[in-house]
Amino acid sequence: MFFITNTRATANLERTVLKQSGAVLVNVTSSRWGKTGANGGDFTLNTKKQALTGKILANNISKVKLALTDGSSWRGSLNEDNQADSASIALDRSSSWELTANSYVTSISDKDASFANIKSNGHNIYYDASQNSALAGRTIDLPGGGKLLPQTKG
Image (cartoon, rainbow, N blue to C red; front, side):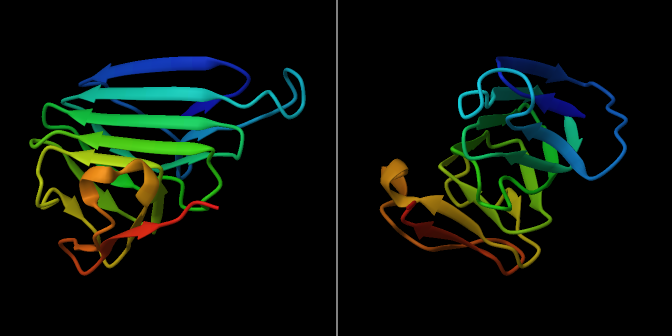
């Protein structure tokens, strides 16, 4: 649906109907445009009252941020291949995330401190402990059998 390369971009979605083919919602990566090694993307996706489905991916020179607000829902994975330079997610109390695979995040914030709005389906979210001081390196059980786990990004 969204392919971001060699640029910085922001999309603000509210009650938008998306019709995509395939499993990838967002791919932030380098491609044939720009100087090799410096042509990654930087993408921010802000949602309000939005339903999303699909993987969000980024390569090692690309960044992606997702904000789910005002009752938004997302079914997918974030950086499941653990390749992104950075991958961040923020949820408000009224929004939800249903995992379809393990996800690797640089930072995660959730206005629901219990993380009850994340349905794990047995998958884990690995977070960069150095970028999430509020989590204090804790492992947190998520609804559905998965966990929110610290990792040291190397």
